[in-house]
Length: 232
Image (cartoon, rainbow, N blue to C red; front, side, top):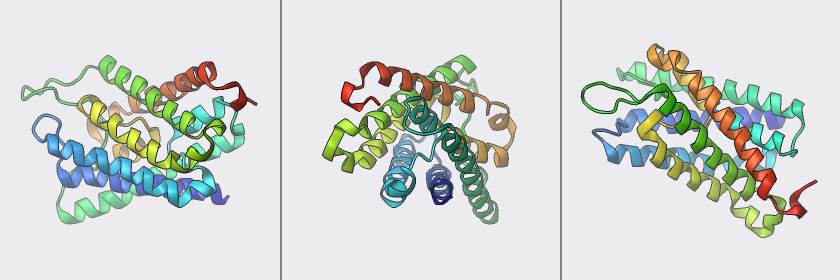
C-alpha cells in the first residue's frame, strides 16, 4: 500500500507545483514566452524532486502513461499498474483541489488545466487532431526516455535516471505547451479540468486517450530497441 500512497503524494506534488507555477506565472505561449520556460522548469523539477523522494518506494511513475508503458514492457503486474493509475488520479485531483482552494481564496482564476491552445489574438485554437498528435508523440518520447533511463542495462547511470527524466519533461513542455499546454500525463489533466470546467473538461478525453496511446507506443518502440540483456 505504501507504494500506491507514494504515487498519490508524488502526483499531488506534481500537479500542485507544476500547475501552480503555470497559474502564478501566467503561462501564455502567445504573449508570455518567459512564463512558458518557467512552467516547463517547474514540471521538470517537480519530477526530479519526487524521483529522489519516492523513487525507492514506488519508482516514481506519477503518470498513468508511464505506468502503462512499464506494464506493457513487462516490468510490473497488471494489479500494480491498475492501482498505480488509480492512486495517481486521486493524487492529481487532490493537488488540483489544493490549488483551486488557494487560487479562489486569492481571487485568481484558473487551475492550469490542459486545453487546445489559442493560436493568435483572433481566438482560433489548435485543432483536435493537432492537439491529439502532439500529446501522442510527445508522450511517446517522454515515456521512451523513462524506459531507457531506468533499464537494467544502464547500470550506474540509473542513479541519474530521475534527473534525466525530469529534464526530458522540461524539453517536452517547451515543445508541446504551444499546442495543448502539455499534459503527457492523464492524472495531471483530470484534476485541474474537473475544477476549471468549460472547454478544458470538454476536451479532457484528448489528454487521457492520447497520452495513454503514446505510452503504449513507447513500450512498443522500446521492445524493438531494448538490449537483449534487459529483456526478461
